[in-house]
Image (cartoon, rainbow, N blue to C red; front, top):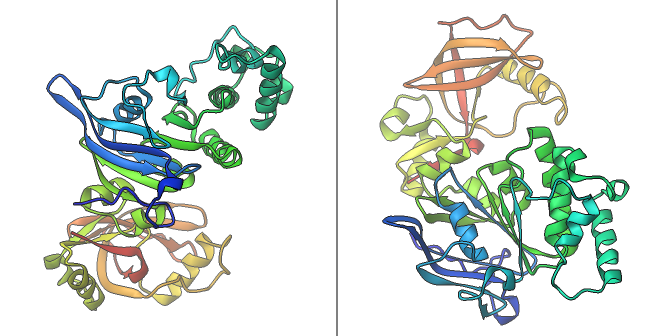
Length: 379
């Protein structure tokens, strides 16, 4: 599959005035193992690209090669049209933020941030002003004199972000900086990073295996597998048009219905037509693609499960693409609904049922529908 990696996030071709980070045919090997295989992409100035994929796909090796921390056997890394392939790490003008922050526990917050300015020829006053500016930017103004060892995980990562930004890097590289934090703190830090990167206008490359982080932060997402970029797209395009089954599975799609299985569904013409239009092998279902087919049940479930976003009793958006009878395998109480697991053909599916109705029992048959607005054709 040919990937056009020289597009701005608005879809237009890049010109000389748009030159930011450009990686061209980069290959990294560890002995006989090819960790990064002829990868190419371009990031426009002030934009963020996420490298997304499972463990071992090559995303961290790629990031380290961009930074100059790993030698590339071939290919180039450029910024602003300047070839940096033979430039040492400390002269590339890139900043890095790691998972552990790599802060000095015995230094204060201000001391850690100031360390990022050492050797740059800044006067003491310039350093103090820059440190104060960054401490305020990351929301640690009241903690400037505290030792790093006394900070929470989120506070320490804010300090690490400030230190990475201290020398005004032209590109900031993130290597899974939030993976050690709990989900709530991770979500808050994603917002902090996004706001600060937008405020500073810094170009960024963000490595993660968490699609929520990638979707929240990136203008473009490079989905990686086995050392290659298998899809480069905007977050919306990646979700709505996964390039293949591997991408769709990583994003959480499933089950996948082939043409033979689709013939066993009722009123499944929309599914057949979708496959025919796209030349697909499977219909992939989003996590919320299956719902009860009984209109009365649907309206109650929607009103209870989504009361924060839609009035109780309203119909869910979208129309059915097919219906089928499924067998309940388990049900448990959720937030105002029954969370139901059921067997659909050879697949396990999940949906909700209203608590105003008796709890569905294992072995019970229920009719469900597949929503037309929550399916994609996969080649």
